[in-house]
Amino acid sequence: MIGLIYSLIAGVLVGIQGVFNTRMSEKAGFWLTNTWVHGTGFLLSVVILLLSREEGGLSKLNGVSKLYWLGGAIGVMIIFSVIKSIDSLGPAYSIAILLITQLIVALLIDSLGLFGVERVPLSANRLIGIGIMIAGVVVFKLK
Image 1 (spheres, rainbow, N blue to C red):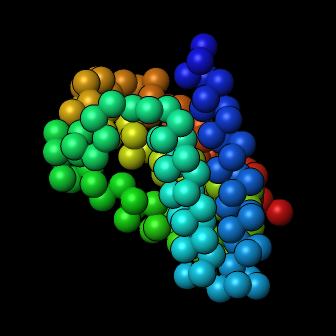
Image 2: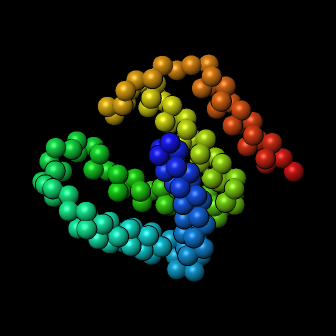
């Protein structure tokens, strides 16, 4: 149940953040917006880290695969892509395509057991579900 609640919160926040970032970039420019977004996120993360008093600190990074250190750089590209897509397609259509693409990639990660994720067999139900989502976006976009 908690996973569902966090997923719903993330969905709301991604939708809002995309529009906020797009509007900010129209006035401030993309790279300033991206820097601001990640800078304020960094500051909030540091405050939460300090308040949470996690043990081990930066030394814990030694136990993490260096590949996963790219998460922040990927975040920069996510913000770039979301801003450009919302600017071009509008929020609803852009986020719909983003979510379907995200689901397809997550399905591949699950099905192939990539990045240490437990392998989940690909099933017809999953493919039909993605097909229905794609059909929904096509219907959504019809004028």
